[in-house]
Amino acid sequence: QVQLVESGGGSVQAGGSLRLSCADSGSTFTNNRVGWFRQAPGKEREFVVSIHWDSENTFVPTSVKDRFAISRDNAKNTVYLQMNNLKPVDTAVYYCAVGPRFRGRHSDTSAYVYWGQGTQVTVSS
Image (cartoon, rainbow, N blue to C red; front, side):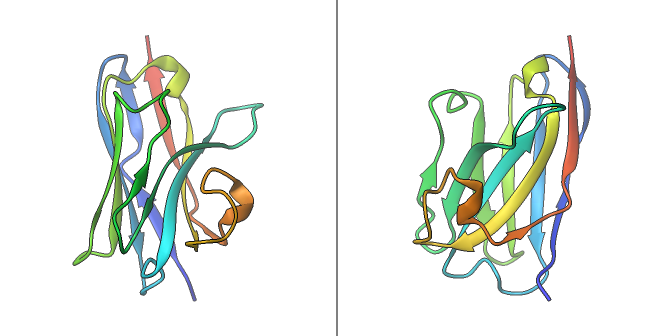
């Protein structure tokens, strides 16, 4: 059974940093794509960043590329989302997800099969 466990969320003031972790209980990440999404209250879930586990190629939208970074630790089967200079608009529940590398667009939720339970990030002004 696939289990993705996110951690690292919390409350910070604007300008602060957080590092989210997404741990894979098995070998689900191998050969797949891992993405981070977020969902604010009343809004649709939106793409944040993604990484191809094997090649370590990353996809970081221009909107966050100066503040967010994704990386992975092969030995720990863990993907990280480093978030710097956080803003109140970044407040959301953050989810990690895994999907086949060549399934759909990396920014579409439909491209992912397994999802974590989410971790809350709250940024105050």
